[in-house]
Image (cartoon, rainbow, N blue to C red; front, top):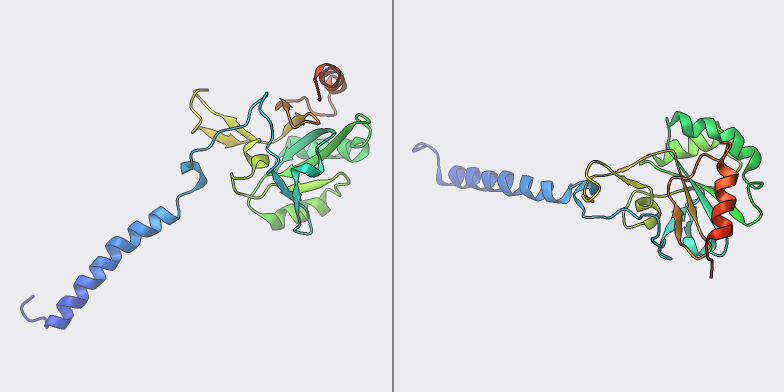
Length: 199
């Protein structure tokens, strides 16, 4: 290295410094959501009034819009065959399940363009929304399921399909409702509505 000039040596030191610390900074910034300490919402918890959804026009819809009635959330994703098989029934019956029940769909996924495409492809007639991708949104953490050891909140996964029933006061009544087209759905639904306090 004796034949190298002082400027060349200094340049090599600067480049080495940038490569070492630059990669370190990049690794911290790009940590995925799985590294964030989050907890799944469970039956018996309340859905926060700070929860929100996004409609197809890009508007943010607060959860408070749905409070006051029973809410059934249909969580689905692109490529989910059981989700897609339920769409024809929901299109025909979404407003006939119960007079005090509002049914909405909540799309799980990172590709918003694919969500737009599937809304048209499957001709969805019932209200449909997007949860977004941040786990700061309680609507997204509501869809999380625990894997493995039930005491370990770090093993969480978004799973579809999922049908979640929420009371008019925001109580999470059942995160694993039967699919609406099943024979026992209405029986389970009416039982919850009859026996759950809403005041």
